[in-house]
Length: 524
Image 1: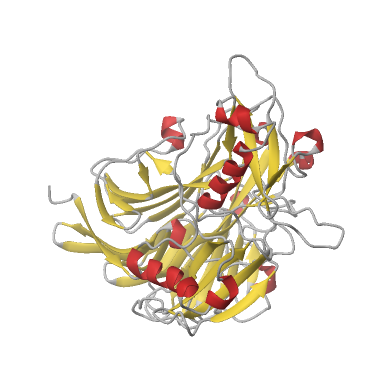
Image 2 (image 1 turned 45 degrees about the horizontal axis):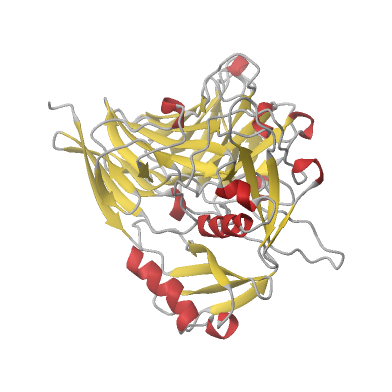
């Protein structure tokens, strides 16, 4: 039919071969060879370095930063250079403890299986290993150093309520198992009571830095409605990744967004029963989906994909981001893992120009999630309406809060709270043309009012290179207020951060686990 949507997908940027050439070349003959030769090491993270300037048209990133862990010397090594040049990379050393990769977690489980007491139970399937929170045990030794120790949860299997739930640490330097008083390290817990979907055993996930970018074009008949670059979570920007990321988003031939993603995600428990945690948004999980593989990490589906929210199952058939048509919307969805948490990163783009960023929350079997806790998700929306410059942010209130007008211009960088009593919403406008997009809060997005951990709802900031996230943060809560320094945001390149807040209470009434605003075109 004439009004049906059609999707074309084309791969872009770094491919698997270039990724392998770089990561292996650094160690075999490149700049890391003198540092890692003949020692135990592992690639922990691979990042494409963000350019310091925007470009109107996309260019493949030219620089990389690879992080390896040297187990012999208990240190992290970072190599930064230009793609294609592994010998000229600059190498630095740090005491950083990168998050475990799926391969390192598997190596920790292999050490655990050799433990005299716990190993036989794991081998017989009496105890099932799982990835807990926090992922690492960072207890310092008397001299202040931290030996790399991966956390491994052990779920008892059997009828009734079997005992023996425990979270242990696997010291990757000494290759031994460490157990904790109370059955779990600080900020975690392992009780007989469990909440969440049963965790899938031996199911693959992704690390940080696997290739995956693609151009997506959406047609209605012969009309090109949408064109944008999508980045899979594993390859997304930011120190902790940022979920399914969109770049260079054009609607009907005009630029809407330069970049749109979720660089910051955290959770706070009532009474500090667990955590708090700063989660990551790069580890992809399995979903139920069928279709054609159109680029690394992307599946073009003839019917809607299903996540843990739909199936109540942690198992799936595809690892990555699914793209499909749902009525007059194009949907991009991926399930993310962070320990026992399962997050849904989703974008819906309607034929009428509306963009719906969505984020949802679930979990697999654990003790912590039985306790009331509060998730906070923060989108970074880098609007370039028409172009980067000449953008203005306006706020709507009724009853008015400034003079008699319902709309007023935000003159300088500011944080604003949502206010349903004032029907508060925002517009980013290209002042010369009047083209605009309106940010309409979702009905379940909550507010940070009175919550010092959530901090804020909406920040209107001026764009600066490097201000993608706040890591390494001094604590798990968001710290982008450091970007807010009173600069003018009138006829400038502006960025809006939008926070949504979800309370997960398994003992309370069921509520929707999905949050997010609507981005609606005006005068387009």
